[in-house]
Length: 82
Image (cartoon, rainbow, N blue to C red; front, side, top):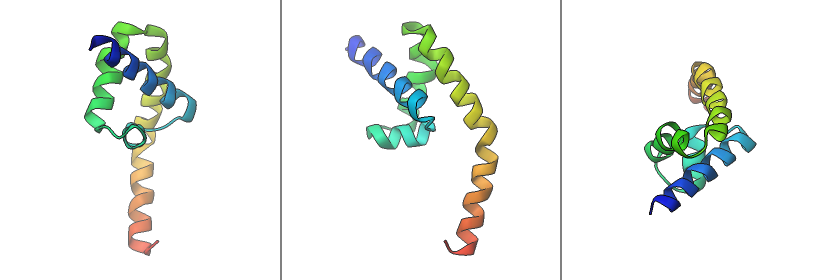
């Protein structure tokens, strides 16, 4: 079972690195919960692959810095009726 979790964590990381996807988008793509994606990326991946973790950490940090902008744009679209 540990091998499949390790493999899943690496697949999630590669997908996020290649596409620059958010945790939510990654969860939707793989049909799993956001909490599973986050746990795999933040807690399990560093134990298995430090190189992938360092790369995906940059994307997570960038997404965290941009989230207030995305939220504001979503609110704007909501009230404009788009």
